Amino acid sequence: MEQTKWWQTTTVYQIYPRSFQDSNGDGIGDLRGIIERLDYLQTLGIGAIWLSPVYQSPNDDNGYDISDYEAIMEEFGTMEDMDELLVQANQRNIKIVMDLVVNHSSDEHAWFIEAKKGKENPYRDYYVWRDPVDGKAPNDLGAAFGGSAWEFDEVSGQYYLHLFSKKQPDLNWENPELRHKIYEMMNFWLDKGIGGFRMDVIDLISKQPDQGITGNGPKLHEYLQEMNQATFGQAQYDVMTVGETWGATPEIAKLYSDPKRHELSMVFQFEHIGLDQQEGKEKWDLRPLEIKALKAVFTKWQTSLGDQGWNSLFWNNHDLPRIISRWGNDQEYRVESGKLFAILLHLMKGTPYIYQGEEIGMTNYPITDISEANDIETINLYHERIAKGYTKEEVLLSINTKGRDNARTPMQWDDTEHAGFTTGTPWLHVNPNYHTINVKAALADQHSIFYTYQHLIQLRQTEPLVAWGEFDLVETVDEVFAYIRSYEGKRWLVVGNISEDIQSIEMPKTIGEAIIANYSRTEFEGTIELHPYEAFAIELA
Ligand code: TEU
Ligand code: CA
Image (tube, rainbow, N blue to C red):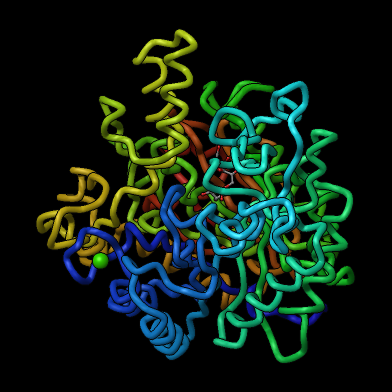
């Protein structure tokens, strides 16, 4: 068998620092807060933290707009705090995977401030500039957060490109000097002993804006191979890299993650994430999830990468609504559906990612007025759609179902005021359900969602079948997701009823009791009736 990499048997935990733990009462999560909670993460059993950006930033997009890649955001602490976090995490065998946001910088980055000074400035070419066409933007390329992707610059009379907000100008990867500055910066972090990089919208770096090409541009893989050689691919490092690639198909994923190509460890693919949006429309244009399609997507990804790639497994991140509210039931069956999604995902092949709060079953926080929103994407969307004639109710429904603030409400630690997140005023509303849904309560209840995650993390480390086994879908009624993992003659059946209705399935011959389950079932023979959101794994005879 192929040599095992540490990230193939580990589970990663994503921290959104602003919302994790405040240590000084200013209402904003910080690095000291994370250090205070490392023991909790060690108890959970994770082997790495993906840390959303902690670099200096004017926070137009909560840190995804970086003004200095080698400095820490003041609100989050200092470089000494960062170094301390690395030491303390490493002592607990937890690696720190940094977010690398190099498709764009902040417009307040020194490079952009220079570049704006004029066409002759040596930094001008670090960004993407174009002359107006007929007195207007060069073309109709749109930005992810609404409006044109081109912003006019009065000083030079040219437009610059920004695929996200206008405070996130796109970097020009065609410029070799810029690329090498980025590699130097990456080595600065690697030499601090970090565990790797999560690469923000990395599939956009070889854009060809004049042709309207943004993702998967012609030199993308050339750049990644060059980056690999210049940075993390060097012998002294043993890190993981995961690219955020919204447009990846399995074929594209292999280009990134085939070990022979020396690019990345794995990518985040988002095919399952798009299943509840109307075809060809935006994520805000809702449609119900078809479980059948969900099963087909996972089966495709589980069976097509082979030795030429590695899957990442996730339901949640800081851009997505909470899975229990999205595809489960966040009221009556919150605990059952939370465990179901955990069991189904964490017994697949790949590296699982847990987003902060997922392990205690945190839920969406619906707003009743746009004044309660914080996220730039949400606020822009609201005004754009209201101007187009949508009703307030329609837009709020989309926002409450899909908006990014849902994931960003502060972590719920206990039932004291503001959920133990801060002694001050939290920067974003705390979900009032913190009185019952919180870490303290989860740790005190041996049947909580937390312990299901803890068990699943252990199984990945102790059972080669979980890490390496083959995957086969089992034919069942649409609402039931059942698959078999097999490894060296051993076979596990994993079953999950993704519905509130009772579903019958025909069971093959099994051995012993369930390995993990969310109901206490003793009968596994013949035709069995699955409870709402019931999930279990059991060994097959
Ligand atoms: O996300 C990329 C991205 O495409 C998302 O903004 C996506 O469009 C949206 O959330 C869902 O419709 C990454 C980061 O994860 C996100 O937080 C940043 O805002 C974005 O890049 C820009 O850096
Ligand atoms: Ca703070």
